[in-house]
Image 1: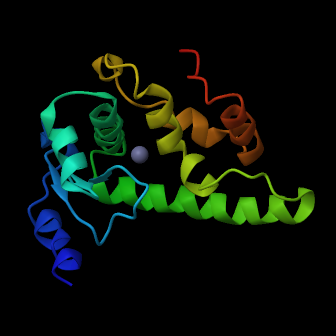
Image 2: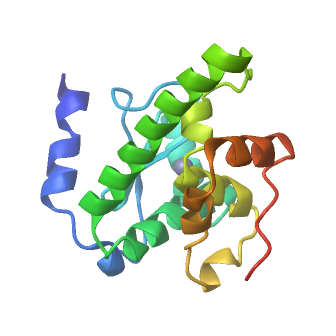
Length: 167
Ligand SMILES: [Zn+2]
């Protein structure tokens, strides 16, 4: 119960994404399912275990980079956390519905957590997290993923989610 409510002060004290210089990681076992490593939450990172939180806080690595890409994406959504999360949920819902339709037509695609992994925001974050210099530029590739059809994103995913070539 306490874990569930712990996110309220984080939301309450949240500042605009552009005002966030760094995101500290905190443990939250309620909102983070096992198997997920971190969740960007209004300027903080929720981690499922202390060990993972420590890894986030230890320095800049690919895990931290992934979450910082989400911060930069939120800045590109009119510098608004709410717009970012609304869009995030919208893309997830669209994926869920699209995947259900695909499943019924052509059978299972066998991508675990597909609605999550094919979210344009996640596709950019996963494709670019190993490039530790990525955030020297803006994180706006999600817009290009968002313009693709679900099938196009699915085939990109099967090819290994190669980073998009810069325009
Ligand atoms: Zn992510």
